[in-house]
Image 1 (tube, rainbow, N blue to C red):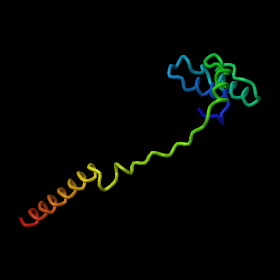
Image 2 (image 1 turned 180 degrees about the vertical axis):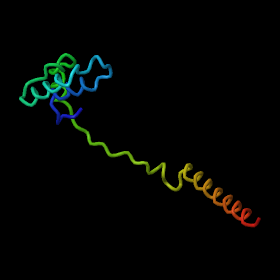
Image 3 (image 1 turned 120 degrees about the vertical axis):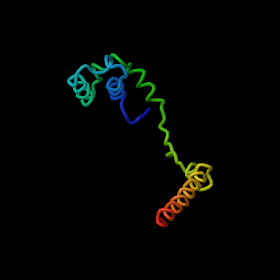
Image 4 (image 1 turned 90 degrees about the vertical axis):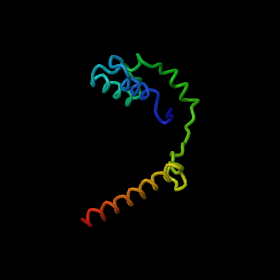
Length: 108
């Protein structure tokens, strides 16, 4: 829930992103009409059939924004992680085998 957006834009987004094609806007003209109405301060006409604007406004009043910290992959990429150790061992074995194959090929 983004409280910076109005309930009307939430309705328009819900209709535009509906999973079922039949629940989306039938034409771009209908969506543009809703956007123009919203710019004038009026509620959308076509999206209104999908979402109750009063319920959204009530949710918007009591909603709080939450700042989330970005997920870091530090644990998965740390040097002491089992995955990193296995990858380093695999790379080391690959280098040794390639050097052996190179030496065998050059000695012929």
